[in-house]
Length: 76
Image (cartoon, rainbow, N blue to C red):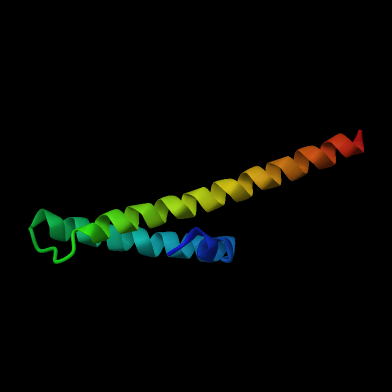
């Protein structure tokens, strides 16, 4: 999953996707604990996808903050 794909998603879709990824990560960690992983690199991939979602959310928060600050500056 790329950041560009995530930027096209709505905030609700991002939240849903993050929940799915976290659930998958939990399941994989449980399997890893009992040594039943066929692809251990999948854990790393899931962690990075979750981090990408957080990055996109942060970008949106910062952009909204800048827009609000700019609007407040114009109102004065």
